Image (cartoon, rainbow, N blue to C red; front, top):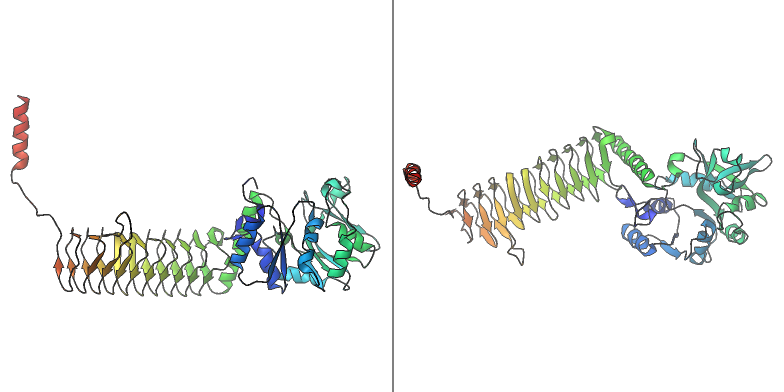
Length: 449
């Protein structure tokens, strides 16, 4: 991957690559799921436990990278006493589905037999080739570095997915050696060993699903394919996605029916969007709970906020974390909110910053209003009561409270609380000097003489 992170921690649709095969195994009913880790194993464990709390996960460490068979053997202590089929997956296959796992499990002809997934690739470079025996089906898998020129022409390749009975697996792995070009213990040797005994069955699967991620280009292709699946699922549920090829979403987002997603929308994190919304072009929504009938005009960026029904935001609105907007709120262009509560029907239509503010119902916040919430040491609150009219270019120096129904004159800088129903003015007295420009020009002309 040419990066500092281990491959399986690179993200696809908001989750590390390794999350997907682990999640699919859990969905298929696997318990426990043993994750064999090596480089940056602590980070892998921390992320999986955070994303899958309470799941029956166990972790085993492969101290030295001595091959795939060696990695599976590292899991043996974690499965002590387990009887029944064991499914072996690769950690770099984010596009696997539960159906594919079930297909491989069902392919076993007897409890002691081995089933493994294969796929046909036009360009099989880098993959182990599946060599068939005329009498007994698959005879062996030959890794590319060990393959003959004729074997390298084979297009059926190993997909890295196996199902085997526990007793057979541990007994057979003990026979695997490292007599190959890599000097590693290959899991693929199970096929040849099974062919000599209970038999090996090849289960053909989709190359799209089973292909691993090995470089940055394949990472981007996997992300696009998984996003297309998410888009397809949403459209089947009644969501309109105007251009699925210009739509991005993380795993786990939810969108209600009759919602329209315009081009270049990105939905991230734990986002939930209600029915009948419209999310404008270029908007980025991260971990937000959006009620029904909400309109986000183009190019809004909002995160970790709750938006009430029928609210309207944007264009170019910015919601930093911690906001709660009630029903019918209007937040307009170039308005920024941070950790603020906005009451029902209130509006701030343009060029305003509200930070650490509690705004009541039916409040009008004029253009250019700023809550000065930070004094250099701490964040201070602003509280604005119901029905307040905040004139344009008002500066509210927190902590400050504005009583219900008060009026704040445009251009005011306010540092003291305002009682309910009051008019507050915080301007410097205007001074007008008539004829000043002409007198200045005469003075300058005299200076030049």
